[in-house]
Structure formats: C-alpha cells, structure tokens
Length: 209
Image (cartoon, rainbow, N blue to C red; front, side, top):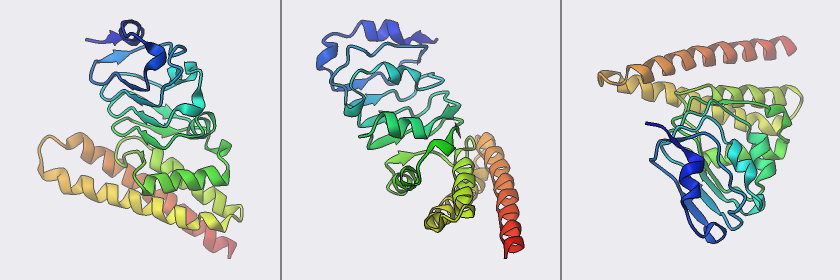
C-alpha cells in the first residue's frame, strides 16, 4: 500500500529542529513540502516509492544538506549536475537499486565530473552497475570529454569501464541462484551495450590516428 509523503511529514513535529530526517521503509510516494526543515543535514528515504528527487527543491537552506539516501525507490532519471550545483556541500548520495539513467550530463563542469567519479570510487556516491544505464551514461560522457581533448578524463573513463565489466561479472556469478534472473538479464544487456560503445570508441580513436 502506497502512503502519501506529505501526509506522513505533516505528522512530524519541530520541523525546524530536525537535522536528520528518516522516512525510510514507509512505502511513501508523491510530493512533499520541506520548506520548514531549515536545519536539515541528512535525508534518509530508503525503500520507498518515490519516482524523483523533486521535493528536495523545497528545502530552504540547500547548502546545509550533506547526505541523501534514496536506495530502493522507483527513480528513473537523475540530474547529477543539478544536484552538485544546488546542494554544494553534498557529501553522500545513495541511489542504488533504482533503474537510473543520467540526464543533462553536459551541464557538468569537468571539475564536477571528476568529483563525481571520485565520489563513486570512495563509495560516497553509490549507483549500481546492473540496473539502469547510469554507468554507461557516465562512461559515454567521459569519452566525450576525452574526444574534446580533455585527457585528464582518460583515467575516469577507464575506471567507469572497469566498473561496468565488474558489474557484468558479478551478475554472471549470481546466475546459479534461481531468484536472480532479472539481475542476470540486466547485466547481460548492459554488458552488450558496453561492448558496443567501447568498440565504437576504439574504432573512432584508431581512425583519428
């Protein structure tokens, strides 16, 4: 049963004093108004049914937000450039177990993209490699930066490529478990896309040489 987020949040008291808001495991969905949460540092929305991060826009003091956990929701797209710009002190983001794709990556500065990949390396930014296309989206963007002459992004491109391969391998390792069919299918599809993109990229680089 889906519960409305606003109804739940309205029942909370002392909104202005809350620094750590935990609304996890409540099957919440819909919109919510956080305008009274002036001290909010951390939002935990683990295992709900939100389809986007839009209600974060209602936070009044966006520079205070440091941690976001949306593990296990129903988010389809994420604008990483917007998040890093709007919440400049964001230190931790968990959007694993969502069928994510990345949008508006061209709005990322090279510095922001480097910070993003470093966050993935440090496990402060968590996105999964078998569900959705977000890692492929990031890899394609890294390759685009390299093609524009930004050679500092070569290492990031290589790292993302390695993550995709590891994700495909881990999915294959799980195939003996009978309840992991969706993971296997997602991993194989992602692996196929990865091979196509990487092959295209290598061919393009050879032609340029």
